[in-house]
Image (tube, rainbow, N blue to C red; front, top):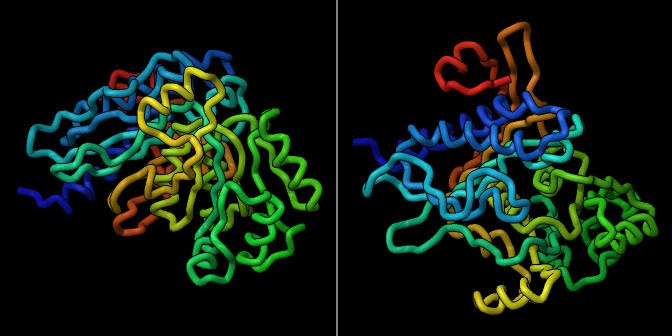
Length: 345
């Protein structure tokens, strides 16, 4: 019988197969203005992979709640495993950046994360009862500077000017040399104003929070900080990636209705609490997989080769080992279509 460590190595690649197939199945909808159909195609492909995977997976972050879109929802089960199979909490965004994809724009990815749930434990990931959260993410250099007391611990309660000053010191840069990514929404205008007033470089994104928030922890991304109010589910997925990459995310719930505030209070949450990746993704054993759907800063998208070929680029990470793999794959769409029954482009 295979050991858990051996199973774990195989499971890692089940996730990258799932995001690859999701990207290949959804690319048919590129630029066609139908976000729901693209999401549904990606979800179908993910389900198809996990119909064969020997795990007990429970979706704790899924589609269909915030946007009322078709897809894989909270509480759904993934995998064909029995009582002795490893148990995982799963978070997924079949297409992060659906608006980008529907408009034929860059920076959409298919992404999944999973946290092993040890026997006797209830969950390995949290599900925050707030659609939006205030988020700040940074990379390993800043985290190391904090651990060595070279800069003070950062908090979401600090003025953002102060955060930028400390991050610049950790990165051995001038403040004006920082690159900060902010979601392009009116609620984030205060961050935009600060970045511009400090003379730093600003990148605004309309969609695709996950890739942008992971970027500060990726070598050669050119991004130093991500900040802004965005989707809470995307923050959980980001936390899994940053746990493997050695970066950090801070999240604080941003309830925008009385109903959300009541729901959070009833669930025992303090909306003022700032959560780190250890609060969001428990333990030291989690996976993260992302495959590019359209070309972006983090990953190349699906590219067709001739009448039947296609290429994908993926990132897959495992926090236990700290291994990060960038996988370039070439697919025979005709053979995959025969095996899966999906459109696959």
